[in-house]
Length: 376
Image 1 (cartoon, helix red, strand yellow):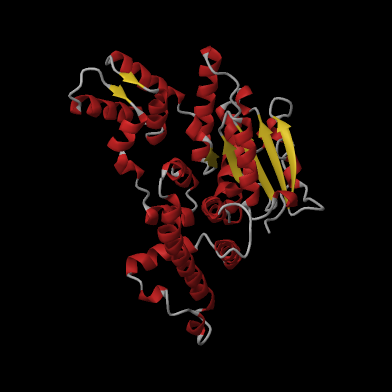
Image 2 (cartoon, one colour):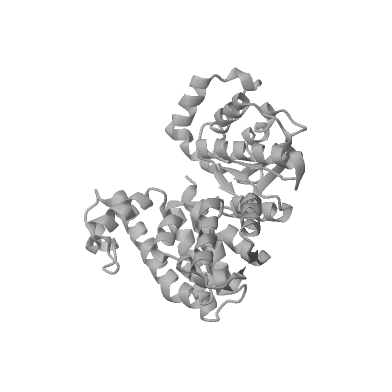
């Protein structure tokens, strides 16, 4: 457990060199994995993401004491005070900071905040919420600028960001205006589709529109959702191996970016059961083997604990190296929890247990594992 460090009484009392030492300290490296930025204008979705974060620590929401703070009502230097008091009746303490976009924090203050989060103790979880309140005008532009600044801060300090897929209104406007300029019609659901597929890459979205115009022999072109799904079918193919690699590496942004493809897939059940689960289970087993070997390699006959199939020793060297790297983000406790989820899934498939659909369970497991890999 990390040593409890009392929070400074003044945010300016920490200098830049002290912060650098804190962020590079091995004991504190894992703490940044317990800091999340939620960048969604949807209040309900933010609450869903909060639940997802708490369920993946690993713990449950019922085992976490939650404090919600309005960023405009409490000094930035005091945001983390509650996290330094070890909870008496729960395993974790979570502080949720809302309405950050209402503040005008300087870069120096954000830098000091980065130094403070490096001192969060092992039971602490911090969730920063960038609540959007304006939809148009100069106030909306100001909020977007603040949002971009916070996203840069999060990336710089290795903080997980969730909800950015909703911040694509600019690309939607660019698509609509470009089609108007080209004198072609585009359906609203086609605009949504392009903005989701290409996320914030406006250039690629407009390039795809140009390809449709150039390939069409019609004068009155109408870009529909159906047309796009056929022309962009190559983007709908989920790379099973890459997805699983990113799950075990804790790449939340990549896994979240695949959510749309999962929702759109017509043969999702078949893919989940015949492609995803077998590869996922095998890779989980190989990671468990790598952890076991690293832990027991100095003990005689440890190889008797390793199953013959699948066996990491029989894999090509590049797979061994990949598994060894991924195993650094996992431990036996995490592995056991995932196996428990897989056992529950197996019981539901056999009709032994009831509950939500196995499809939903598997997708939830994807995100849960990704968060678990992120945690130290």
